[in-house]
Length: 400
Image 1: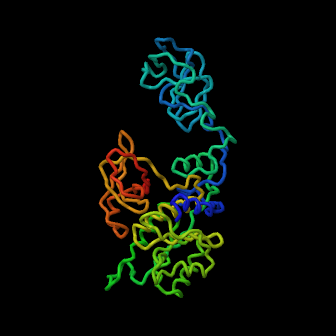
Image 2: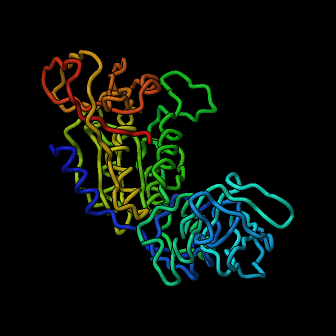
């Protein structure tokens, strides 16, 4: 069987960023990956700018004890100085206002005393450039201010608006079709009958897709009949990614791999050396990536994080697609025995001494409730081990 790292490498070999699209600079663009370099259309600031409320003056007019100057005008933000500052003069100025010609420093208001309507006493000397942001200090016209590959966060939105951009070229969020399979499944709105269970995987996987940066699209529940599965899978193959849960193992009604093959999906692996999630499937047809996840909810969640989430991020243009692991120290002794590397639910937190991790109570892949006490998975090696408190362990992060 493939190791997890080998299977991940195969997935990423077939996952390529989606072609860029023109996108308005709206809330829908938050989190997208920029697909072009962006240059400034102006100097910023466009003038020498005061950084404090105070007095704009010539630094050479003040001694170590300060000095008294004549106030010639007041300039607020959004207005332009009308008079140059000459020897022995100062301009009352507000934060963000343009510096008057002749002035090279600003003394903050708290270090001054207005003597009358025309003069001001300053307590300290000043140095040229004090409390002044020079023109073009932030950026110059024509300078690249954002490079392709940047993730659009709120601060990038502000910068793009500063340089006059109302739309950008970005990689779109991949559309991800979700199909849960099994005769035992009913919708969450229904009361399960004998031998039935509610479909928990659909909302769980949809939330994971959103967290990964994709757009989920539910195909509903596929019954354990080839005709039904074929119709729904055909619909799902129109998306960038199709994720199925259930029906991928070796049971009599595990029909998914056969139907996928009939529809031209080329398998790249089926079974990976891990627990939970051994029967996981990955294949492709044309440009569509197809994941078949085991039906047990924890198996589905783990396999999504290990294989589908990196694929979604890669299609969305992220250079670092994950998955993301850290080294953390166990907080307590933990004995464990398994024939495969195991992803055990755990609580991960950062302390002064670094990352620490504590395995949470869990009885296996059907135990979805146990996951509500976890924010990560500690990776336990195969074999019979007594892991000691303080031992460093690899941990899969699934929450940012």
